Image 1 (tube, rainbow, N blue to C red):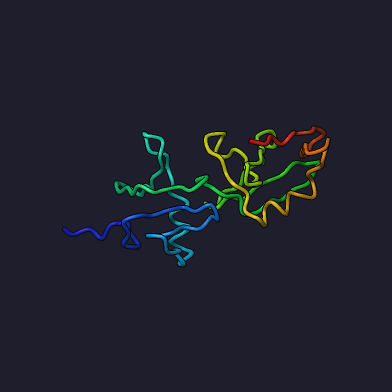
Image 2: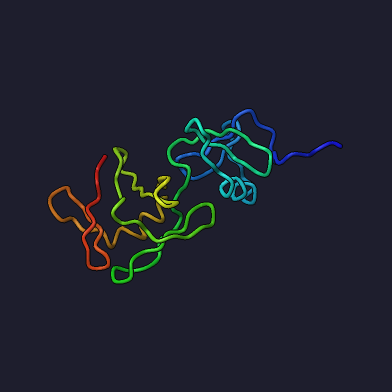
Length: 153
């Protein structure tokens, strides 16, 4: 019996970009439902790369930076912050894992510390009012009565 497979697009290369968008052979995947489906099914391959797994089918993918992105931030200094990821999940922000890369991108660990997620611009702006300069060129997120330095890597 023929199988249709899960491949919603014909592609020799599927990529998750730094901008939080999916690409097929360098062209953006504009169907939001497909993009969300792919985001919900990212897993790490045993060799350290990434793949999309749906049932028995697998497709290797390229990840330009992080396999997840933070699309929004909610909360406050007193109660802490909740982040929403591109796969539709929400979790508490692990404030102690915040870091800034050479390109000034903010990221944190997600998925119980197993992955990193890059903050998209809108999410970064939502968190920015709660980030303080604690010394010249040094920043920290203050929440739940603690100061969490933001590492620069």
